[in-house]
Length: 93
Image 1 (tube, rainbow, N blue to C red):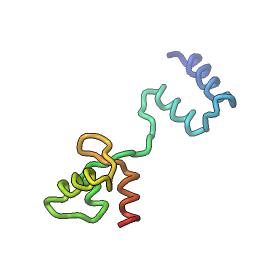
Image 2 (tube, rainbow, N blue to C red):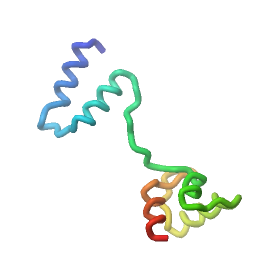
Image 3 (cartoon, rainbow, N blue to C red):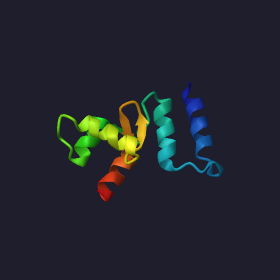
Image 4 (cartoon, helix red, strand yellow):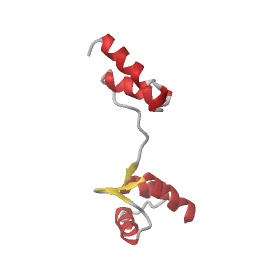
């Protein structure tokens, strides 16, 4: 992509009708430049969730699996739960 193409594309992204924020346009420019966008973290591993909730035993991963089965934590993928569910669990517990 040439600099003219990049300028043209970013000009389109800044059109008010698209409704993109300045941060979103900056993320698009970073992606064009080849760098990953700075996306917020959405999920944590069972081990990280256990640490955040204060479970430090050797069976804390199994405890997190139990919480997922019970519906107290939301599974985000293999061995991962959503960060939002961990934060909500911490407020409730």
